[in-house]
Length: 56
Figure 1 (cartoon, rainbow, N blue to C red):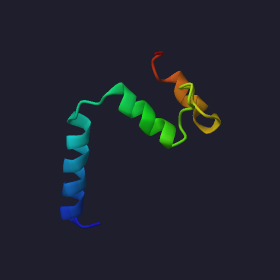
Figure 2: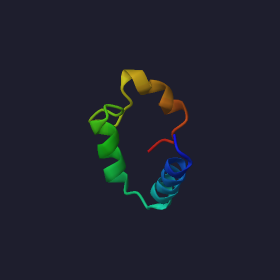
Figure 3: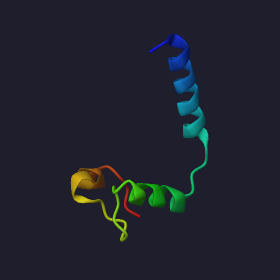
Figure 4: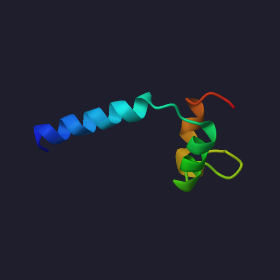
């Protein structure tokens, strides 16, 4: 990967990280990625994430 591409990706990552995220949008995104169920539980492949994520 070119140096310029790396700089652009780092810049994009910093921008995304600094944006305020709404809980509903994050949950919807995780559900569409099949990480969370409709009841907001982790799916089988991602159950280990429950150990590091704070409870609701």
